[in-house]
Length: 114
Image (tube, rainbow, N blue to C red; front, top):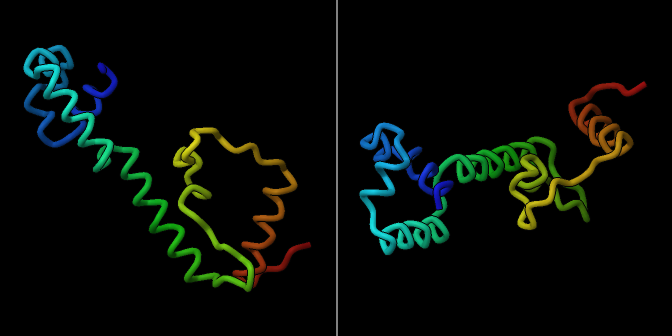
C-alpha cells in the first residue's frame, strides 16, 4: 500500500502533501485508498503508463518507417520497453538475436553490413 501511496504522490495533486507518504496515508481512509487502487487498475497513470504511451508511439514510428513484410508482425510496445510485458518477466536476449536485429535495422536504413 505504501508503494501505491508513493505513486499517488507523483500525480499533480500529490504535490499538496509535499512528498510525505505518511501525510497522504493519514488523510485517506482505507476505502478511499482501495478506490484509488481500483481506479489505477482501470485507468493506469504514472511512469508505467508513460512508458506504455512511449512504446506505442515508438512502435508506430518504427513500423511506419520500415514497413512490414508479409508474415512480419512488426514492432510491439513491449518489444521496445520490456518492462511492459504482461508476465513481468524480462526477456533474455542473446548476442546473436541482438546482432540480427541491428543488421535488419541497418539494412532497412540503407546501410551496409560487413
